[in-house]
Length: 223
Ligand SMILES: Nc1ncnc2c1ncn2[C@@H]1O[C@H](COP(=O)(O)OP(=O)(O)OP(=O)(O)O)[C@@H](O)[C@H]1O
Ligand SMILES: [Mg+2]
Image (cartoon, rainbow, N blue to C red; front, side):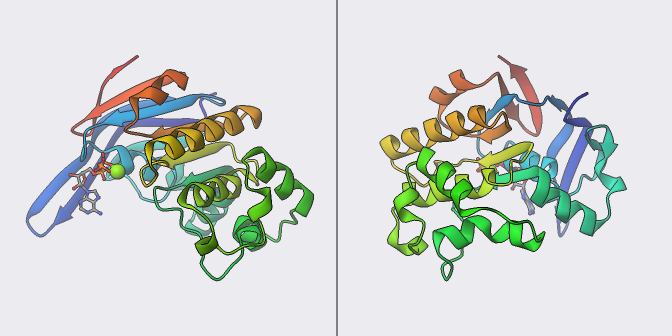
């Protein structure tokens, strides 16, 4: 069964008299364990696509299914729980809470579900991503690359089915970005997770099982 399926997905944003069609009758399937890279010009609908797949935004028309169930079947509270338990998010800005340590940031989403996470599991994953020594520091004591590694640990700690990453190396210099991207792809493979990632770095398209090119809210071809 497909993990996620979009059928004739349309997303329109209306501001005043102007309506922008960010997704234009898009059809897409994501299978468990795939690494999918989404490429496209600015404004082509990449972030919109990730947001609707991640349940952060709703479609205007069309359908989106998670393991065969329409997202619209889930109530708001069910959807938030599902997001925390099945999805992991990594954004361009790391979104770490400044007043929590790195360790506390990593376990915070799990606390909302009263799910107990063992320190040794956080340490093991952090060691793989090279930030074990940073766990008791605060975000402003870490470099951008280290903060992004922490947000990768946070996204993976709950063993999500899918990780959505929107330009995860967009704020990093080229070398740091490439190191973080390599870590992310290795970690996703090790965890047998699924990755749907927007990136401008064509170099990493070669690590993907599938590359989707977007233009004006539509897919213009797969490689
Ligand atoms: N909240 C919103 N309100 C109104 N219009 C929006 C909103 N979000 C996105 N759009 C519009 O939808 C279109 C697609 O935007 P989107 O953010 O998905 O593009 P993108 O491919 O991620 O671009 P970038 O590479 O610059 O991040 C754009 O025309 C954008 O202006
Ligand atoms: Mg975007």
